[in-house]
Image (cartoon, rainbow, N blue to C red; front, top):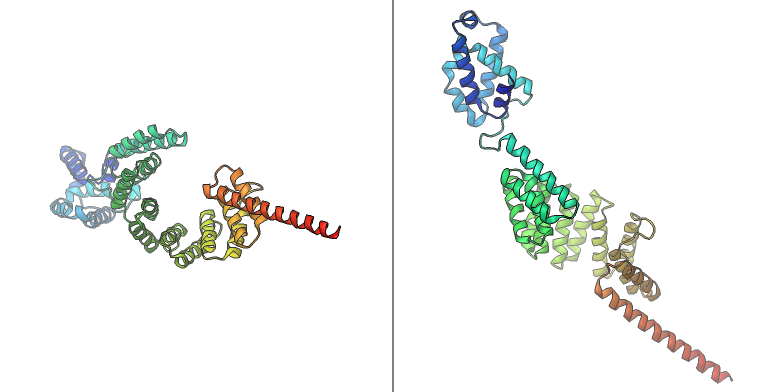
Length: 350
């Protein structure tokens, strides 16, 4: 029975039909002969009807089932139909079967095992080994979307960007409704400067899931890269309406406000972002944006402090060092001027 159940789950109805009918013929002269010549019970007829309807509604399998109408209609095969119906009901899978052209369970299981090993290697920063394992997983089961997704991610981290994009594109071909794949692919395209392709995937993601904060964020990032700050701001606000504490979106929103010359709003947004971190845990890019907003508001001493903290994190952009140097030089010049002025004033009084 277990072997038959597995065959039915895999959609191998030809094998099930042949085996059960052969079983009937072998035992026809024995105890099954009596059953096949008797009037079937109402329960058996109901089960047979359920099985026939199941076979008839299974898409590509319909023609094969109809081709065996003489088998289904024969009283001698009530046993077969009853057994098949019970197996399908026990599996709880209705009339849905894995496509005959899909991977067999052994291939999928092997691919998942290799994929897990690859992810473990990636967690240990052994990207070369992770790439090899995930490549094997994809070859073992080319239709496994997760294997391709993780393979593309490792390829990207390894600097093999075009191959990574190729893997994501193939995964999207296999699963075009996958919003996460649209977003992953869109981000890759954007980093490569392919804004039209990134925008296309962002729009696809929004169309398939208008409540996806990541999709709106990606759409806004593309707009910002195109210099469309107001459009980007609108998209970021849509994203924050769905996920109000998303750090990446908050940071990009503050950047848009800075570009729109609205430093006060930028500081307010950065203050919200800063609350998501612990004491002295704010990242360098947050502190750098904070310094630029303070500088724009005419608060050089506050900006100097923010720039120094950002540089102290060891991750600040090179232009932050230049900004700090310019402010310190200006502050030093102003201090010297002030000291000279006080000295002149004292001399006059004397």
